[in-house]
Length: 442
Ligand SMILES: Nc1ncnc2c1ncn2[C@@H]1O[C@H](COP(=O)(O)OP(=O)(O)OP(=O)(O)O)[C@@H](O)[C@H]1O
Image 1 (tube, rainbow, N blue to C red):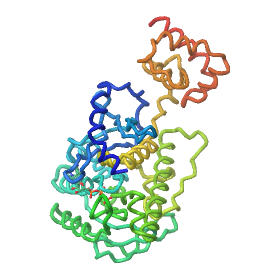
Image 2: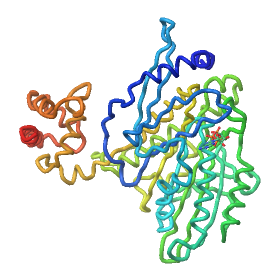
Image 3: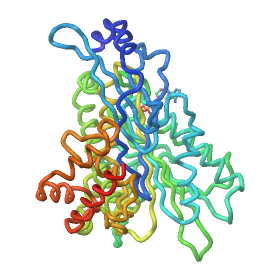
Image 4: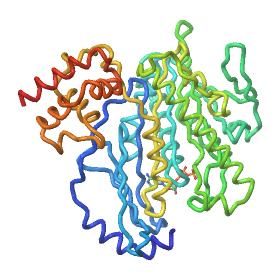
């Protein structure tokens, strides 16, 4: 495939030049939940990449990224295939890690300082900038915790471990193996892992550097020092005896590897890749399960959350358990390599990020009578539910969209109402009247 892309780079540029400068707007699908943010970072094209960028953050919609792939059409004439993905926050190639810290991580640090469990994951294909981002974030966290700007006195304790398959290693004691054992309250303890108290930024940075030097890496096609394990940095913030300890996790997940690379390295690497994929899939289910409960999507109680499926989710159980008593917040940063040759894994990464998003419906449930909805919310409902394929209010005149909904049979209308989170069947009639009122006015 790389050969195909290389051969057709000029064609790719000419097809891009012919693209409409303002793509059709993607319907905004609402706000993220209170305790979960899914962001993406597109790293710059690096000198050695050798391919043009294929991932374009939209200027008109700040949280949408377009990917334009070059498709090897059976007719022999390459053509463009475009895809778009929506996240809660998108950081383009010019964004710095400092901006990401301010926008995404600073809130988590404060949350952990105040006694909550805050977790930040960096996820993405190999060579997409996860380690680059997490390392700098760790430095910024160290500066914030140690520069005296936070209110109150706390003790800071650090643990850094590495998970490869079901094995765990302590990165602060030269990769000594450790055991993951569940205690009687169901919390997984890292037995044998050192927990070191730090008193200033230098001590904290020394530990971070020491841990980085013991991280398990291997060479992949995309990255000469690819991380083949999940690195977990746990910062326990010990409060005065009356308050609960806060915890901040910064997690650099193992890079998802390309099938070509796996094929080159044989059975061991394939097993390793399989383990990584199992743990990432379990993580996705756990994060989503918790976010669903937090956003009150799940009316039928707590969904099954597969903590036991991987060592990673066992270790993080208390941070992702909807039944846990300590408040939790999670941020996921999907890292993307924008190179044209990496379009397939970039699409996978952004699809994974989209799957993690759970939109907040709490306000809808609190105020579920559509007669009380503000007009913008009615329009959003129409955009989501008016027809298949969806009709966007920008594409069709509002009166026409409203009329189309109004003219549906009762059964069809009720069916669509039931599919919309937060709308109960008994409100369908009110919703219908509201549409009529709105569109007669418009
Ligand atoms: N935002 C960025 N700006 C400049 N260079 C970057 C950026 N992000 C990543 N890089 C560079 O890209 C290369 C790959 O980055 P990194 O090792 O962080 O990837 P990774 O996703 O952790 O890969 P793996 O999963 O294989 O460990 C490094 O040389 C890094 O310096």
